[in-house]
Length: 376
Image 1: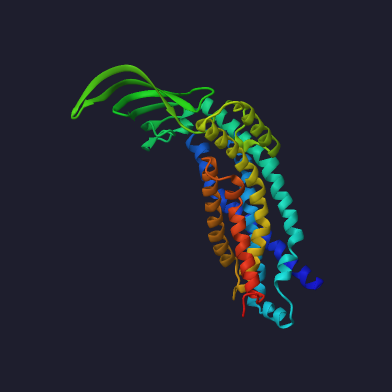
Image 2: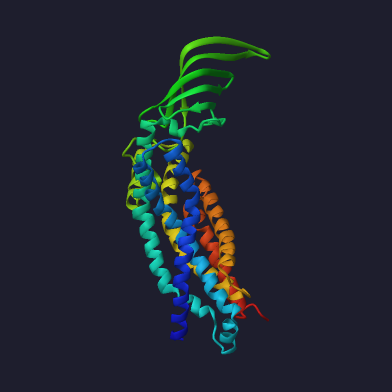
């Protein structure tokens, strides 16, 4: 038995690292194009772009580890199944699922590594990314605006269009729509409002059209006009050193929950209760996500083993295809659960752990089915 266990582990570990490398590469491709655009299109210094790249890596690695476990397990046991080794084990009266459970020691190491990354490395890297973006926006607010594209502000209050934006933050041919007001200007410049997540659009030589009734409008001309636009929900919110919920360790999150309780102490009413619940749930979501996604290593090893044992053939492409579908479904459930908890509807201990509970339930069902429990 020990020989078989060592053989499986020797096959599983290289498959895991190969899958990890490929998944990280795939997830980085889109990010690399964005960074190249910042470097070449926006003219940002190479060192700043390099820092953004490096500080984005921890979160990508954090998400890649559970998925890599799923790919490696499917490949390992799928190969055994395609070479009839699973059938041989069953003919000898050996339950192949015991070898899946024997990967627990390695998965425990991966769980600890993943949890350390999520609680220590990712919060720090997310905070550094936000600080870098603050510096970028203070230096070049034009980075946050895309030229030649009709877009809307973060709060959906304003629609805006800039025909051309230069690296010195100047623009030409600006169009802004807000409520029943349409503003256009020939030129101007952008400036970041420090301490806020807005930019100021300083427009020159333009016109304002305001609808006063059906089919009628009032026109006015200006030499200078300033319009503030909300560009993001959290890039520079709360100042340079203040941390958001995704930039906190568990210790910080627990302390934030205590502060929320103190701030709402003595306040009564449904409105206060809902605001308190939303604030606390937002921090609880991040705490549970650190544990839940890390625990996904165990759930995916079981699921991957069950799928691999049932496969008739195995390949890297097949393992990636199945894993991608399952992980996308898992992540969609996680995001939906996060939204429900952020709105104070369902406790995060239910929503954030539901994907793992569902995965383990399916694993248990197929294990019991294959062992003959459900047979009459």
